[in-house]
Length: 273
Ligand code: KIV
Image (tube, rainbow, N blue to C red; front, top):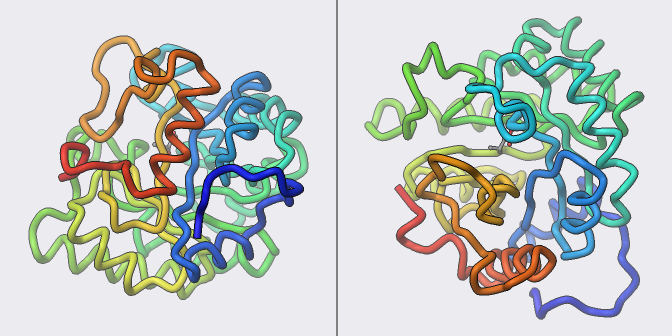
């Protein structure tokens, strides 16, 4: 049970400790970061893992989608964040087209771990990615499988839309999630999924399920750091919340977010689909 930040030694978070958190009912709190300074702030505030997401294409590079992000770019940002982390686990996104088959996925995941310091890779996909996940697992690469809205498939999906709204789509997503878990995924991430479906998947999956726009029944939450600090110009997704006005400082806002996730205060009804 979470009872606020303590003075106990900050033991590094591992895949095993994330699994224990699910088992004990402690919510997992995470954020993106793309550089050393923010990586330090997120780590110091007690986030359990940090994602170097390919959202860096939009947040850091001002692109309109995540598609142009390259392996070299994400490795650069990963290395910057890796230098900052003392406790949080470092998850890094596999860019668009970097895991089209198992050979490519193995080569590129190897680069993220060796050159970027990643401790887990995240890949967007459906159950069709099960073989890739299996091969990565055999090679000793921890994997997070990202389902629901998959921003790398924005053109295929026809926009950034909530996924799994009808019964057939919901059943298919649950099946995909369990297939990816069976293939060895250590974590599942659901983006823009109705809260009831995310709850179903979280209850059926043995591994932790992290949500972004997927409601409070997930085992943990993630947000894009710049969204929750109120730094995003233009559209901010309905599922995010700006923690800055109440906190008044970056460190305070990140700590407030971590506390709100841990206590179940975030996400609230207005952040859900
Ligand atoms: O790239 C990213 O920031 C992500 C989050 C939206 C989870 O994948």
